[in-house]
Length: 116
Image (cartoon, rainbow, N blue to C red; front, side, top):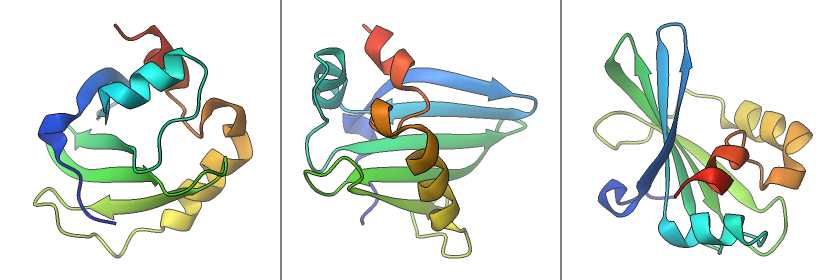
């Protein structure tokens, strides 16, 4: 997986928990697909931009890799866009797979549906 072109993605919601602020990004085609109740296209990136106490900490990138419902790949990246290999992406995949299969593996699915 490569780091996605952030300037081509839309910020569709922000999640706040204590000192954590997460900006969620994806492309317009994915948002339109979600609104229409369709699967997002192969190649879609969903990006969590992770801020801790208002400092950019890292990016979590999910990329749709195939036609199957669970064909997603996850990767953490540092603020400079380089891979952050010391993060456990299997933990991310496991949590999303367990509880979000009916929502395209997205915890912010409802926010994507409501985004204009």
